[in-house]
Image (cartoon, rainbow, N blue to C red; front, side, top):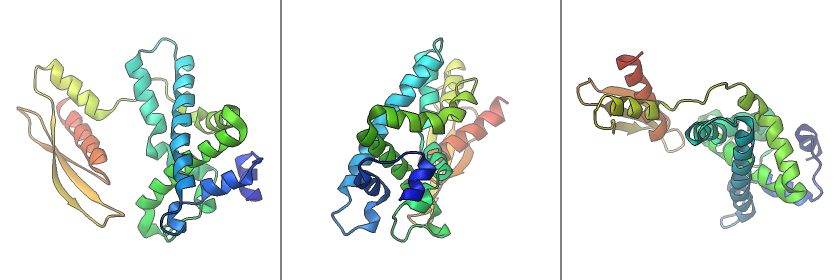
Amino acid sequence: MRAFEKDLDYTFQNPSLLQQALTHPSALAPGQGRDFERLEFLGDRVLGLVIATWLFKEFPHEKEGDLAKRFAGLVQKERLVEVAKAFSLDQAMHIKGEKSSSHQKRLETLLADGCEALIGALYLDGDLEAAQLFIRHHWQNHIKSSQKPPHDPKSMLQEWAQAQGKTHPIYVVVTSSGPSHAPRFVVEARIQGYEPVQGEGSSKQLAEKDAAQRMLDNIIF
């Protein structure tokens, strides 16, 4: 705990909050784990508030839609996992049977949840200031490195289709395979007048984005 607090650069006044944030329900008896889930719920909202306020001030001339694109990219699971690994949360969390490479996808989800739970614990222990310091430290490079709002390929493809007077793109799941902890989806993107294009991903949403990007590459770029 002390070593983790050193990595975190924060000492908890109430160590039990940190213990709760680091203990995933999978490591507890059935029916327990509500403390973690409640902290995760709170941390998700605190992260959203801090990031939204930060973007509002950092990019005063951007439209709401562009701010929303930035926001979505900063609070997505992949970003939370990246931040969690930066301060070795994967080593500190108490997780039952989930740290092997065969459970990598499941582990990433748990790390994202744990990062939000930790933010919730920081907020309760040190008020918004503690949570904000943590968030600004670990997200500053991600905000500063992007001069332009990120573009979601599905949104870009839909905007292109509308500009061409075509109906919205359609996404159809072709196959879904693999075990529950490591699923694999193949999705087909379809637009009237163009050959369908397939994309793959570990979730339906990621496969749809991949298919949209491949379609954009074929018909625009």
